[in-house]
Length: 389
Image 1 (cartoon, rainbow, N blue to C red):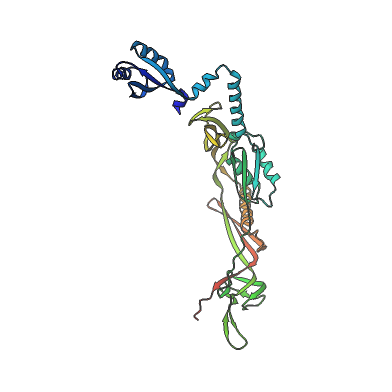
Image 2 (tube, rainbow, N blue to C red):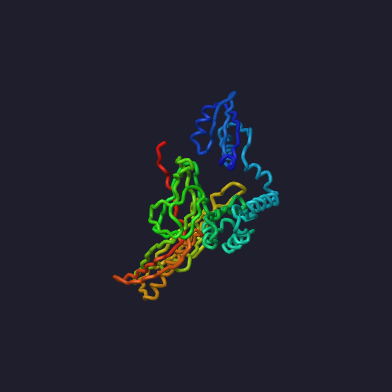
């Protein structure tokens, strides 16, 4: 590559003593190479910048120098060096290609069914991602975090660029269908101590009746069925047994605690050139502790990634503070924990909250809240019958 840039000239030297000329040439400061003698002529190569020096050297040594061949970009530039407009046009075209390769030309969204494109595009625009945005200046990871927090229906999102296109791939939260195998005989047993308040039997023989109480592990639907001719056969018992049961959970909160208080997010940008970073900000130290993350967006030339880009450094400064809570404040924090628990574990359609009883206590500077739920839900689970045939 350097040979193409610097330019190489193949030369021929005619002299009376070729071997002596070669020895003298090798001991000079002229960078010659591939020297060989063909038909009493010395053939070799020299960089274009050393050719004039080689001419003077040949004259001093009474040798005849001829130029045989040239190769390299530099000779093309020299040929058109007086045509300034050609060079200006070339560099303007190159700059335009680089510019267009680093500007968002299109945003493609895939994988969404319930979340609309408009919702995602609005959040992307709030994070600086839109048609015409400068790609190396975009923090894709930060945009992913903002979108996943803003849209509860999304389970995962990936934002990346391919050339001048921004690709947004999403996975929405979906309920995993229950896979029930009906090839093996099994019973349905209780998973709770409960009272039966509803039942549907699809296959098998019901054991308890509506209103009966059952304990954990009791048989609800039997997969062993007796036929009309006093013969016994096995089936895969299936059904919905709705039971009313109690569930107790506890949450604790220290009355004095250390918490992390975050300050405003600080974004610093640098230009990376072959790994060397040139800051685009006035260096100001961050006195407190901080969380750090960075992203490097390299410039593109068509599909070629250049070793030049913008480094986006994200600092989240925080301080650790000791706080003391009043009983009302501690109780409010515990109620938030209870609310999150209900949203995460009891908001499913298969579970219904009938009642809840709350008890609060304080011991050793720790407030504890205990919630006793009365719930209704499906209490049956299949259990394989291990039978000998």
